[in-house]
Image 1 (cartoon, one colour):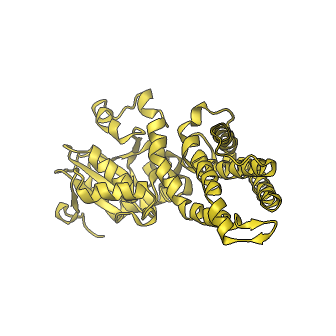
Image 2: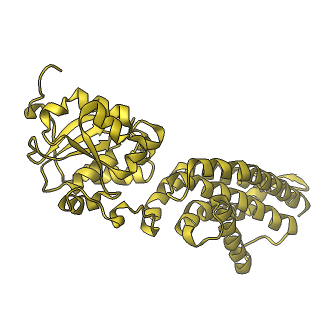
Image 3: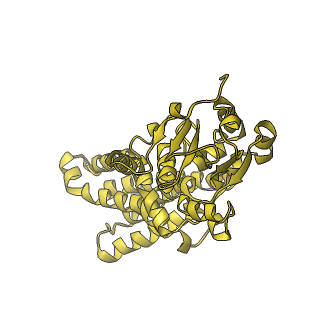
Length: 337
């Protein structure tokens, strides 16, 4: 570009959400269309910004973009959207797409040094791992200010002169945050849940006299109950109870939850009390719940990449062993029963 971009050529956006925005949020919270929920990278204006208005940096994952613009209601501001391939700020910073090079590229592409007099950018704190403030300053002349963790704190952050309190810097992961994320974890493995239920339903037709579909109909309900409870133990209950479960390993937390729930099934009399079946379904439940709970590490603020890799090295073989052992015991139980 050889000249400054006119304000009229910069897309104007609203701080208010439409019904479509709310519907889209519900969909992506349920893992529907999550990989294609994005906006075009570039510069946007909200309200009636001018050359001294603040510039907020965002990822082009639409939910990140929407949460930011909603928090700017009543303000005149610019939003510079980086091309993060439709990934949210936190994850993109870890992958490098929400990073220094992309930020510098966008600043130069829109010649912000000619458009913005203040020469400052407000970058979300969760994007800090990917952005080198001194390099951005050196290459573009723009000073980077890392904003608060939560978009809801942007107003107080601005009012305090771009200074964040310790509370604004604190990354929280309370029960509401975990509850919001569980639909994604549940939806991501829902197809596998259905396939496993069908598999064990058909397996229930096996007996010492051979195979009977009628046996599958008569005996196939209980395996479905066991699998669903194990599934919910790992994908729902473990994330909800995360801080209160012993161990720092998510996989072990999932095992503990499944044991407690399985014990509850025994007390209620739902469990088949044939010894091999009892042990077999306990092993399968532990394996399923442990694996699903371990998957939640990607959504949690409790873990690091190295910690996740270490946990997988330890527990994936255990999960496989539990599942295979349980499967064998269930078959033996079906044949001997």
